[in-house]
Amino acid sequence: TTGMSRSALWRQEDNAKEREAHAQELFEEACAEGRRKHGTLAIWGEDCSFHFHPVLLRNTIQSSYFQKCCQLHDWNAIIDEIYYEVKHLQVFQVGQQPSSAFCLLLRLLTFRMTKRQVEQTISHPDSPYIRGIGFLYLRYAGPPEQVYEIIEPYLQDDEEFTLEPAERRDAETITMGEFVRDLFQSRDYYN
Image (cartoon, rainbow, N blue to C red):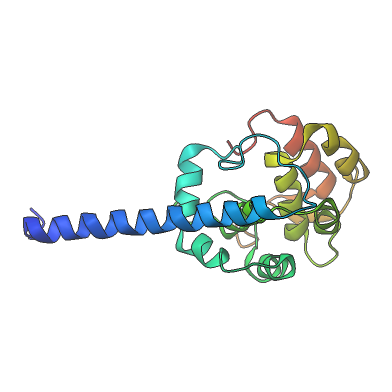
């Protein structure tokens, strides 16, 4: 036994349910905020799941970091957060928590970018991770009839970066062009 009384266990369970409900409410508010914006690039598919795997979506929504990101209501602020916080494009961090990259990707999806903002994101000069998240945005929710036109200039992009944290000994360097080609040729990329 854990040494906890039944009432303590029930309180703990109630607190967890309250946190989950609060996280879901923040996510729904962020989605609603994005839906109200005008001039955004059309979102392909359901705009409440963004083609995330259900478990990844739930874990990301419940992440305290994603909830913090929901307080960012400006494209520049989100891009700045990516610049300072994202150091790889893996789905998970140590301990199987959603990565900062995927929390910020989900925030951009709920925020909804304009076509101009998408283009500025994928060509951003300050960080390959800002660019990578822009391409992930298109992979998850970009309108199929427009995606190729947007990504085509980047298919041979030779900027190098690592998908994994740089401190990993086996972290391989790839080019942005390789990343973009893999991202859009793979059927189930990160699903």
